[in-house]
Amino acid sequence: MAGISARTLRYYDEIGLLKPQRALNGYRSYDADDVRVLQYILLLRACQVPLSQIAAALQDPQFELTSMLSNHLDDLHKQRSHLEETIAVVQRALAGLEAFEAMNDQERFEELKQHSVAEFENEYGRESRQLYGDEAIDAANERILTMSKAAWDAKEELEQRIKDNLTLAMDEKNVHSELARLLAEQHAQWIRVHWGENAYTPDAHVALAEGYLQDPRFVAYYDKACGEGATELLCAIIKANVH
Image (cartoon, rainbow, N blue to C red; front, side, top):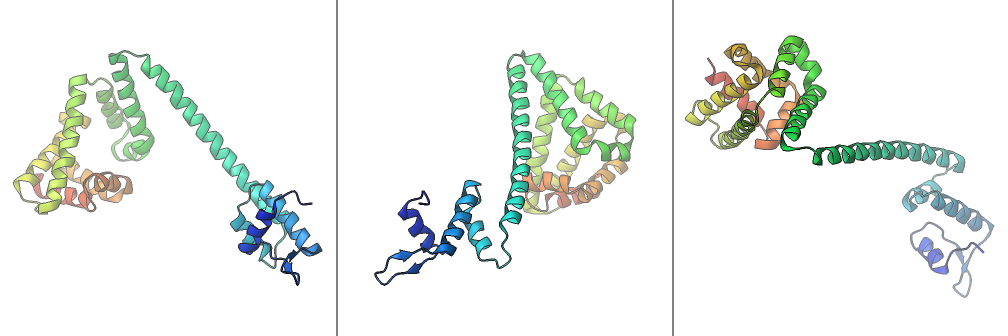
């Protein structure tokens, strides 16, 4: 009558979702209350409510079907909104990939620089402009956008060497070692690449390093790549070696 199999009914009994009385012959005997509960279960399952949530709801003395379905509908609307956003992101990514594949090497490189600047602005732009001013940040972005392929590759290699040496420095924990001095020098060079040679000063370098510790994003950037505590060590190395 319910349109489900005896096997499903036995399973509901086994997990305590729907436990009917037993007749003298051992058969399950479903009364009117059991039928009503089964109707609730089938309706909620049709609405894709997990069995675990249904079981918890049916055991709640305050259970109210309309309220539960309203809450479930709210959740579904949120899921739909998130799914639609994800679909839009994937569609944009696919369109961007198709356009990227159609580019020549120089066009791809220019697109890479544009993406790098946009990513920086999105992640750190507001804070950076408050700290250093629009003119300084605009100049730094312009340096990236006009950078040659050779200069870009050198920048990327320098950034990787900084991470590699910071990982090694984590083992020795000596802010006055040759490795520490090299690391501070490399980080200074990294700043000059982005800020420009004339904009670099030791005081600004130390202030930047101290600022890293105040921003969880920078802490995560170095700690994830080089080990927990790497950002704090980098700051200590810079303060000890930059004069």
